[in-house]
Length: 369
Ligand code: SAM
Ligand code: SF4
Ligand code: SF4
Image (cartoon, rainbow, N blue to C red; front, side, top):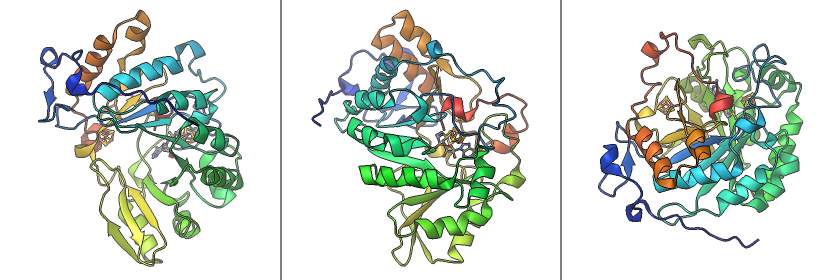
């Protein structure tokens, strides 16, 4: 398919952003920085707060049940609104977009959003990187259409290889074969290199660490182990449920020799390792035990258009209202720049003190994981 590429004016040439009025910091090349000198590079967009699974660590069934009120359609950002905001984020330095949720494949016509975003370029003229994180329940049906729409890469979440364990994690009766079919379809469609996210929860699926490593060795798929995090206020998190990255690595290294791999780019969240025998690569996201806030370049756009500058934030900046009021690009970009400029978030680093605060955090399904 031939695609029309739409360049977005480089930030330096853009007259609309009034940095002086905003009193925000920039580096020598003019890139916007937050209060801790971190640029804005990645944007995660939650396209729906709904999901077809009820993972106990994310949307526990007793809370997200038939009485839970999900956002009505009118409250969701439309694809046009998302595209307009993405253009402003690009002006400010964003190079990578990840579509997430909730379950992004539940959003009707998601391919059309991918197609709109795939036409955009970054401020430096590079193609905008677009990826999507999914539980893969609908992936076998959608992989080809997503590829044709311009999606580059997919990350699939899978927390174990046995149905008993997987169903204990997803609390929905979905079996492992459904997810493996989705993974195969994504590979066949060319949505790779694929990544698999496995959240590890003490006493529930830690025994699946080595079988999962074994299964995905020599497949070209990068398996990433994620420490169970205290996102939201509903998953009953406690430190005893966390299997530290060091222990995860120790279990794998006990079976297969590992070598550390240098990070590809600043801000990469997963520590990278490879099998010494050439079996491929694994990642470990140690968000709890080895916080990486100092290089966090990520913003999040919630399903209803609020900008959050940390996964653990309490409040977001509403961008939907100014959008719908008809504010121009300058106002929108200045709002985002102002919010990023004052950002001082480093929740994971401050976890000990922060977890003592009673404030209600935002659920991951709404803010975008
Ligand atoms: N529904 C999609 C999926 O599961 O892939 C996308 C949204 S989900 C919120 C994004 C990622 O966040 C998934 O890989 C999920 O495993 C991870 N996640 C959710 N809750 C988490 C928690 N409490 N700790 C660590 N990771 C979590
Ligand atoms: Fe749904 Fe993903 Fe959350 Fe599981 S982790 S409940 S699949 S949004
Ligand atoms: Fe980024 Fe917040 Fe996570 Fe730290 S706690 S890495 S600032 S999202």
